[in-house]
Length: 335
Image (cartoon, rainbow, N blue to C red; front, side, top):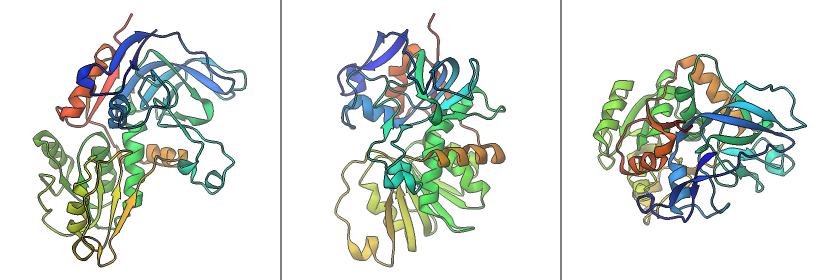
């Protein structure tokens, strides 16, 4: 089968991601084999390709926003049949027995494993997923629309809950790519006022079209103090910027898996008055199920730009350069 492989982590412009041939994977005893129908392009894929995240699997195939059709089943799998359409997200497996898993915080499991980092993902014609970590997808969503919901949507939803805007509150979003534009739709549907700070003119236009109250450059203060903020851009120097935009008692949640260094914070101007700085680590399957149900209820839709699977490297380069709003999605164009 055709697949992309991170041959040597480094700048994507220099060919860190290469198109190769790989055998069609055999599903484990508790896994599904999927024919990939669509795969979203996530910034985490860029971090894997460029080495911002340490190598877990040499030559890994990225991709963890996968919509696939069941093509095979492991011997222990029940409840799925060939032809079923399922989704694959970032969290691939946990031990299920540690204290974190037992208390419902499986996203913190020390033994957790991830699609497209610890195991080959969806930048390929076939992939596998443990059946217990596959999502049933709503019938009303086509493959391309559904793909970004499986990570960008789910992690944005967890970040929104971590930021905890109060009813009728004021939320700031720093960065407005695949995850933020889905998060914004849920927040707006729940009656939150949304202000967007982002570098791209196209992204600012999209934010306003979706109903944001304002959209400005990432370093320009919002027009009113914020109750909550989420940092989606992997730019550490925006942390103090966002903290200073918070009202007293405000919360800043950092949504990315990777962040450049945070400059020194000034206690009086950045953190005083009981402001909080929170991180966001992966998500749980409960987060995923809750978000997919809300997406169906609120009519959340991704703004998508399709790329053929054979141009996955270009999709990542365009993501890095901020050349599109919304989310990119790969569709198979290979024989």
